[in-house]
Image 1: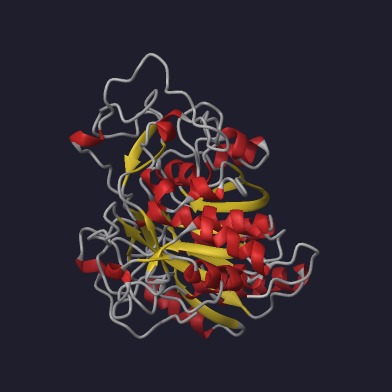
Image 2 (image 1 turned 90 degrees about the vertical axis):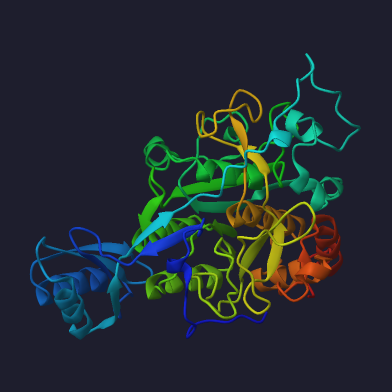
Length: 447
């Protein structure tokens, strides 16, 4: 897998249309930093290192961020010069790196409001479901979910439709835990975790539905995986804002729960060593890491957007395509840096009540609506990854999965010189290839 990283100028900060996430390079108030220390082995050494760090830089409050990676957040007192604190941290013995814990701001995918997308008058009863194995979800039957059809999900469902054996983590704005089309597919967690990771923005709930909206339940939509095991982690607040440390913390939660697939919709014009270390650690653990390519219309072979621009095996970046199989105008791309493409235009999925800012009826009971962006494309790939892992009995590695996704994509002439795979993912072809390369009697998958 050929990937590019580092050393390229970035214009994301110049573009008002960056719809996934942009970093405001200003520090938090009070100033906060992320520090990685060398002594990350053993609780005693970690605690001792934190005490030494606090003593070395006066007027700071040190908190553990990632025990496994030896990362801390260091919050300084108000009124101090952040550049002086950062310089002092970098001079401290045992510090691997120190960086500003910069703000990230999620600019969610655009809410698609076109007249032809408004539902016509619905009959008193939904149309009868097609013959098995197709699901009976009304919005799927009404052909509002062109994305699942385009990736050949309905054909793949004849072979496998459940990824419930594969934990899939979504790092986003949280989720609506009691959504009628999501609740059954959400990972069981304690009440305090649910409260802390409840969606108050809407983006994470929409992403979750694309990946694993409950299928064949007679409600709303069908996800890429009809039955799934989804663990949401809230890294971004009600405004879509967060920090590098909040994203790193969520990746740590995914790792601690042994997630096999991780979906992230954050991109930054500013490179973060902490974020890179967290993504690399997850991939080294075996997680398949899916990141949206970003919505700035940039060639990432020339300009950078992180983590999409990191060179980390087991991670893929995903571009957004429209119904005519063309790259959506705002989607980032790059034949060396963006591996895959999936539908991302006018994607119907689960939402929070009242999330639709255009105030028109997108679906049923105002719990479903259309969104556009690479954030909508990425969960198709994450869902495909989860189904592939399930089909392989967990034997398929993240690097093998990335390779198979590229090899089995439908070739699209328009994408040939824009996306590494040169096409759009094909879930049916992917699953058939997985079953071919992973022996039924056990053993390693031969990719």
